[in-house]
Image (tube, rainbow, N blue to C red):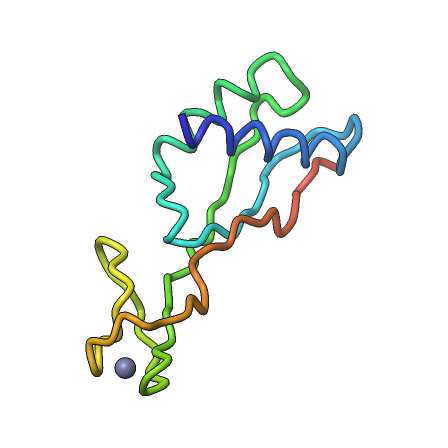
Length: 112
Ligand SMILES: [Zn+2]
């Protein structure tokens, strides 16, 4: 499962970052093009965290909209729904991705 492997990556990053401190919240930037289902991610996080120092922590996801820039007319299009990479202005499909591919742990809140 896609979300499960993402959670394992997050857990690895968190463990290295906080050593043995107790984690409350892990803040993430996740781009829409990652096709992550937040509910599935939260469920997988419980599976990964249980029995570890990360048990009881939660993920706080900041979703980054998918934006493409048209190489024909330079219009930026925010994609909604299915990610069809197309300019909303001139319908060209020659676009570059501006955002939406993020997968970043931005900060980790620990108990003090
Ligand atoms: Zn265009």
